[in-house]
Length: 570
Ligand SMILES: Nc1ncnc2c1ncn2[C@@H]1O[C@H](COP(=O)(O)OP(=O)(O)OP(=O)(O)O)[C@@H](O)[C@H]1O
Image 1 (cartoon, rainbow, N blue to C red):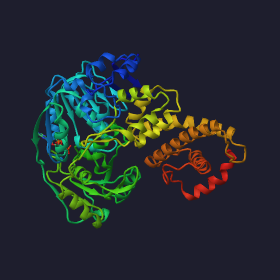
Image 2 (cartoon, protein in one colour):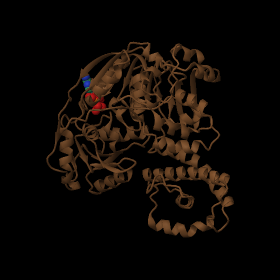
Image 3 (cartoon, helix red, strand yellow):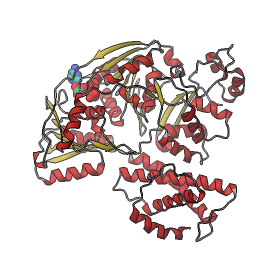
Image 4 (tube, rainbow, N blue to C red):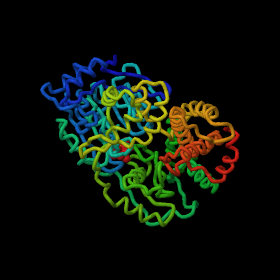
């Protein structure tokens, strides 16, 4: 029987997650349904507690209109919520962390592993023992009553004196926003400090109207000026000490570093998302240290949040980035966030400057800095495990893929919320359904922050899929008549093909993502490409529609070469 407090460790991905069993849905509940479900997972008393005994309305698992009721522990408190709102470099986080430090217990939830890492270091240094919990690591400190976590790891089952959620405007993020919403609604703290852009204020106020919390504001002004320059950088000889050139791919970072260092005047530190925190800190320290020769920084937008660096001038090498799906222009908040790193208060440079490498990018830079960030309209939401579990008991044949699909298609939401973009989760879900795992493990794998830009976690997941892909290829050789691609007709064989297809498809997708993020890696590209071609063959011959046309992005040269070689594998 499931206990109310489910606490598990998924060691293969280093994920630790706590979930409050039935977090309580205070909706009318069909008692017949309770009778059926309650004994199965030992929560009938809990359900009864939140159910209306006179109600006869059928319980609708896809009704997500009152997510605040999922967190009874937080609802039992009248939390004091302090909104620290203002531009970058205005001291919002500084003030919130001061409160956290002086509180008898607390939790910091940040958007980046590096920020969680910095806050835990800072608190421990200030003799406030603090655990560090992220998707990659769990470092426990003796006697710690404080935790510094990435927001996905926020604990909604414990009581805290103080909690800080940094960069709260990210609750509008399509993919990760739901974790910020969960932390906002679910953390049971006497004081909850929210730091971020003022664009999130109306939405947060709306969301908190129903929680009974007491809301206060602290508004901030930038602590040092930021000056947009009217001229672009021009040639690399114009680079000077304290410059930070921002670009969005690792390949481009190293190319810029080479180009600048070839000029013979500067050495460059580099900072990007997938560097281990220790390495990033070393690179940042070298750059911050006036006596070091590394006086220029080349970085990705990983410097955009929270990091305090001695940057005098931010130079955008481009104003477009690939966001995992397409190339697009930087958004206003992204431009502000990155530009805001120049001239940090207390750094060597009291005034920050910002420009672009190319003159044609200047108008977009200027307009983005001059416009207020668009007001956030809605926050991400994702059903809790309890809701999925209950749904699965009534539909025992559904895998997690189908359950997710059902929730995405049928979720009922209030105007303040949108359902999280589950595209990536569903790709993982499709593979998980082929594996002998329980629903809870599958759920954890799906919502785990497997950062596909992080080499270790993405590689882990890819290897996981690869093993199954290999088995799939072996099986394909058995199913197909050697030398031909004649498709068997029996429903069982077709079903099997469909599941092999799912695994191969996921494997190929993961491999391409991995290669995109880490171009230096030598992946087994021929095997990957063969999988890709097999998938296309299946789709064509079975008349299935390719759900992601053009996503596999096989170059045409290697395509025809592999097409020739493919038959030997069948
Ligand atoms: N009262 C203060 N005394 C000393 N240093 C301060 C004070 N307020 C802020 N700072 C310093 O100013 C810098 C910017 O502060 P902080 O990181 O809190 O800004 P922020 O508004 O959260 O910015 P961002 O949104 O860009 O992360 C930090 O280096 C911080 O330590």
